[in-house]
Image 1 (cartoon, rainbow, N blue to C red):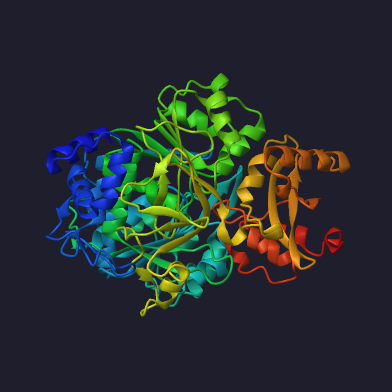
Image 2: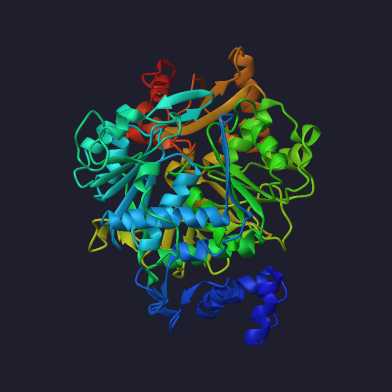
Length: 633
């Protein structure tokens, strides 16, 4: 970041000296900032002439309207023998690929896809774990200009069809099974149901993972649709067997050419299909990797994520910064909570990313990685998915490693990037996100996080929303011409950010707005409580705060524990935060990416349908909240 600042000073005759001045310039002179970023990061492609047209329109601004580039070309710049990908599938599978091997495998799959009739604009879908074949298939698709979309293999048939059925994919890559928490889960039966419900599929490519050679699939291979196997199917190795490695013919396409379709969680209805462009995604990710995370050549990066989460896309883009991807699939706590720290030491990990819930779970487990692991190579910890509590900041610095940059970051699927980020030239303040991202004109209006100027990674639209009505309604209805992100937030005295939760889950007892994260931060300090979820229940022409807790095994919930929870919230928050009711539950529902679903719980408590339960990792947990007699008084 300091080098970028010096480059800006030299090119534009500026005197930028700190993050505040750099940020102010990036907002005031957006075209200069993003053009310099293109050059500084060595983007391969032709930037064309103008950087920004109609820059006062949101939506409607046009970034790099004459540019031509290819996303994959920028991620496959290296072809040496250094590690490009290291993979661990729990304690079952270990593999690695060099940059040369990655390029060659992408080349073969790209040729196979082209031979299968895939062209620019076609959709290529995947139901795959976080493994090398997923990266290869995505890069091969993008090299042709096809549009990628992926789901995690733990999503049910209807959940997959709800997503892919909207976008009519031509090719599907799918896994035969996966490992989680020491168990093997078969996906072949589910795959038959998915394929039967997607009539546009012309090719199905099955990746063997849990079965070395699923013979039943070969019987229906080569696109004939006969035999006992899947119609139009091939095994991964067979699909590309007749194609040799060679130079990849990268299709250089417009800046806004559709790269990826991301899906909203779908907890309140059919998932929205959010289309992101190649250029905006690439530039944003380069900015966030190279500047905000200080990623350098040969850095070794883990971000624990599934392929249904935008952080998977974010992680893969680190290849554009010449880094090594450390992939991990399965439970991050199996066979024990130290597994990712073992990985860090063994592979000289430099950047370690996971969800806030992961760090909370490690703290609750009682392990002290600082005492059992060297972690000498780790320079940065990243956390996102939900707000990282002040207590988790304490845990990282006291029990994992004291001399690291701990960056809590926040953005989302909607922008495939971040509004709040870390900075290697700023101090870390307990419980805060360090800064607003460069080039992102983020403000907080009446508690709402908004962005008041266009940025390159805004969606190019929603699929099947030709007039853009749903797109505008989603982000611009509350403040016309201003992006409203849906986070309840505050700017701090350090010009950092604190996210208090989603705006639609905000509690409002007696007219006082309370972010759910404000309560979670306190409750997670209580040793007996593994996790919690809080909602507002309609009560006597107002709302009351109701807290549900999942306790450690063997812990008895009684009046004394409830009183201690209330006292802790009272003393560490305010009297307004103290729940009117505290109830024990056996489990708490979460999305596939681990996010709490306050809206679904609130709906169940009020006797309403909870929305699309296919979006949940554990929909059965909702039954713990239904018809609770304690909530009738």
